[in-house]
Image 1 (cartoon, rainbow, N blue to C red):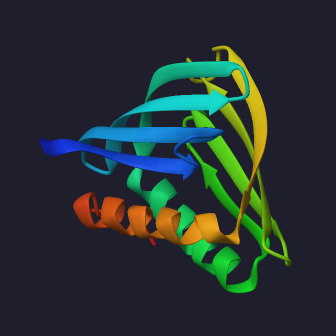
Image 2: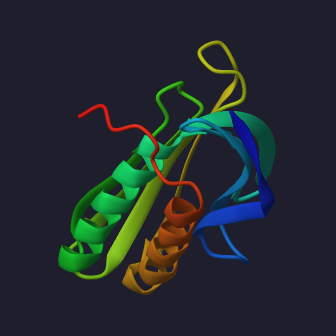
Amino acid sequence: MEAPAQAPLKLVVGRARGDRVEIDVLRRDGDWLETEVEVFVGAWRGRFAAMLNTYEFADFRRDLGALYGMLLGEARFKAYEGWLSLTLTGDGRGHVVVEGTACDDRGIGNELHFGFHLDQTDLPSLIARLDELLDAFPVLRDDG
């Protein structure tokens, strides 16, 4: 059953005027979300469509909460289908390194490997936006 979103919901990992990954959620089909992903890093910019799962966002939200609490460790977003992976690593002093891979055609497409830096002050808005995303598109099926 497909239910369209009222308006695209945008999740931004990074800074609005800097290096970032933007994920626009367009609609859902069960626990799958039809998205448009845009990557802005250095001189590079790319956009592609991707099917991402609500579980992936829920896991990322859990990991981000722990990272923000300790400022040490990792928070990972890893798409089951290989479209996008992000690892945010905290050093315990408030610095966060983002490393990622984006693939424009799952499994066989071109890949962009990238990295950029954030700090602890960037995490609360990301966590709040993830909460909004998960409120709008909650996990429907609990396989655990």
